View: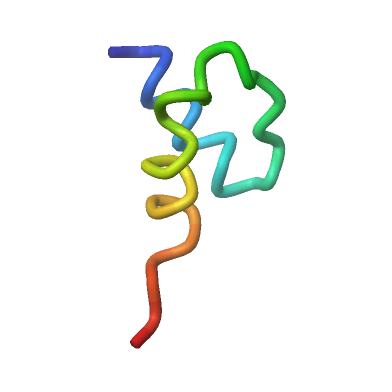
Length: 38
């Protein structure tokens, strides 16, 4: 749980450098860091 929170926090700063964890969370991280605009 802590790792996911850390990844989301890092994604907001644009420092997402952990592909081994984000391969399955990359879309979630991207959504949390950049909310989709309609």
